[in-house]
Length: 70
Image (cartoon, rainbow, N blue to C red; front, side, top):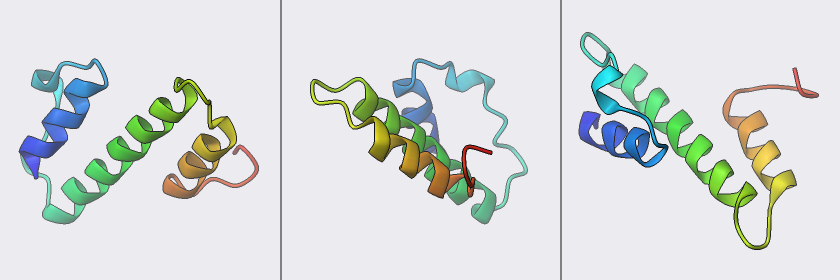
């Protein structure tokens, strides 16, 4: 799972060497991976030829359990 987290992090233009994955439980790693994938997917939607901004916002709201932009 750590390898997949590093791949998604790198695809977001970030340096995976700066990740602090040591000591994380499998549950924490799974949550981190889910959130990184949601961010990647949402950014892909926003910057696609047919932007899905509303879908991206809803995806982030759901993933991070936000309500009304808070």
